[in-house]
Length: 479
Image (tube, rainbow, N blue to C red; front, side, top):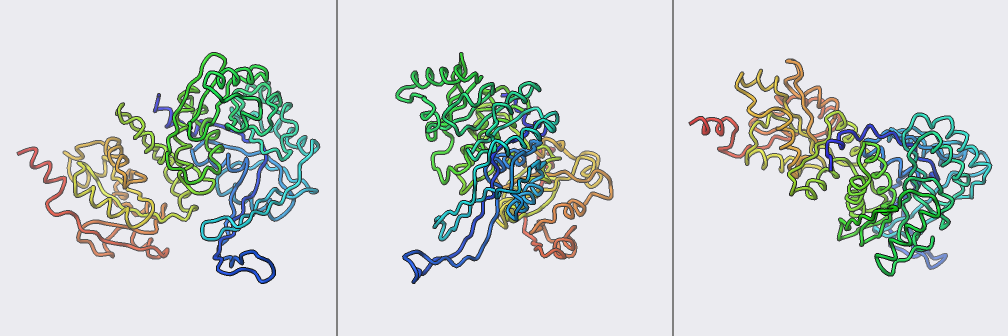
């Protein structure tokens, strides 16, 4: 597996086309039964709106740093406006088409004590006339993308999917499909199709033995003119099946919290990895890891490059390979974490030779919140601060060692010019919830403290472990 390609995720240019939805969640406590009917009364205290359906696929791609556009149908209503605002926040190029006679597909879930009490669906089937609007828009924007991903939830947006596939293939695009119909002939010409086990059986697939599974899958894709099938098999993992090959991938998550949206994560990750230049087998291998992360979370979850990096680190530990998120992408990932309501902790330092004091300090810093950002002095900054013999280890190596720690989520260098030898400007960019510094500083002496406090954050000073310092390590080596 060429891990260098993981630094090219932003090369993936993917257009998602399909049934977009607004997922709405009303949370509250239910301690009484209604006197009007034998149903619980839920006192709503929290509202959440999320991108659903094909929009969730696009969100998964954006969270993995892929360049993504979304083409779908919405109504001229409040739900459509909310969905468009969500997509804008996710940096998704929204190409949604409004129709005046039907509502935006919306699903409202009432949640109490982590249990779904009821789900209310607001939807009407879109017609071929509506689908023609998408086909017309697809023709206009197709040249901007290399991959087209059709996300079919059988709501009518893709009534003309065969014409859409022909248009995409005629333009030389790679086509991926998350299917809903049991008639795979509707998806003729696709490069990849990703049914789950139940969809596979409904399409005529056989599952009584591995041989019958492979033979029936090959017959289905051959008859439908599809190049390859990625069959998701729940606890049995995944199988990538083409005319002459079958590769099986074991499930990567033994304790499943929620499978909601796992299929979205799989096809989104597959598209991004293919877009970065990976071979199909390697792309599926990583999509399988991403699925393992997604099902360990509640709800329709996304996977970040950092989470994927850690999973890859465990998966590839025998090879000694390591993936580190490109510095330029980190700020966007931090913004996504903030949108999820996660508490951001920031600290900084040179971390030239990592020792036990550093490890303990970083673990204590991470314990203050959900995510830890480490501002790392670059080589020139360390030389200015500590003399011409420092640093011992160059920036990339120091960043790699730090990012391998379980306590560290992101590493960002600073100190490009002398006036930036403190992380003050970086802290202003990030605006962490908590700023942590080690040593005997007062709050007033800590760079960036004024900004954090002014924006409602906290500043904490932690003690270093006595007897541990990079200078002492260097002196001992010299001695």
